[in-house]
Amino acid sequence: MTKLVVLITGVLGGIGKATAQLFHREGWYVVGVDKGNMPNPAVEIDRFFQADVADVSAWEEIAQKLTGEVGKVDALVNNAAIQVCKPLVETTPQEWDGVMGVNLRSVYLAVRYLYPLMQDGGGAVVNVSSVHAVATSANIAAYAASKGGMLALTRALAIELARDKIRVNAVLPGAWETT
Image 1 (cartoon, rainbow, N blue to C red):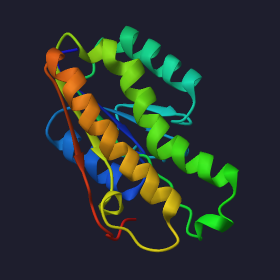
Image 2 (image 1 turned 90 degrees about the vertical axis):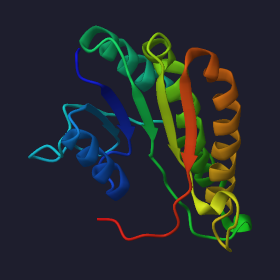
Image 3 (image 1 turned 120 degrees about the vertical axis):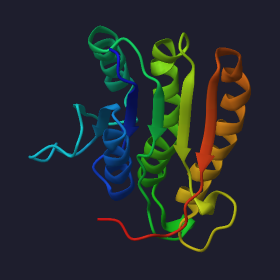
């Protein structure tokens, strides 16, 4: 593969779709991962995986297929996210686990399984956290905790992966309208 390769999770949402469009315009090979069905026509995505980003077997399959198809990943954008809007004491354990799975566990899994595709060429990991990682409001405790955890994981990964010339950063957007 001569093009640079980017993998974007949550690619069918507003931020993910805009990110895919930008990379595609810049000439990158765009790999998208999302739980939803790929729309027709494609959203400027060269390769699409319909998958649960919190599932180990999904990442094993994605890594295996990308190894055979493109052989590398130059950039990883961990963008998939869900939010439960209710007080913590009303949040069920299943809702808590769901938010942690998509918003935090998926970052670990993506890096864990895509690392072999990045380690030789360096690259970048961009984690889409949230302003709620550092300053939050009522009724989104699970979301805030997951995004705070993502920020801490970003810092740890930046130290660990620097030896392989893989940069790891986070962006912390606030509220914005997406389609």
